[in-house]
Length: 86
Image (cartoon, rainbow, N blue to C red; front, side):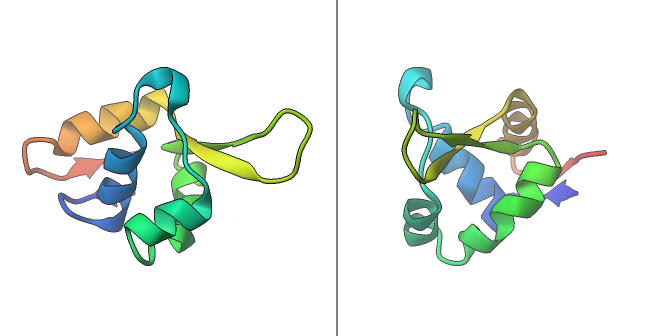
């Protein structure tokens, strides 16, 4: 997977890393609202190891959180380049 500056993947990672670590995470609906069309990319990003789905304690629903691989990818595109992931 290749992440380009300004792509939906890049926008999702920026959204997720916007918050302090203890409160990082957004629902798919909120991600799609902030970056229209990004919701459909989450499963692909999860397969690449960039994000992970984390459920609530005992309730329904889940939030998407960034992974360490996502942090590395975001750092790779922070200078305007593309990050190529295995």
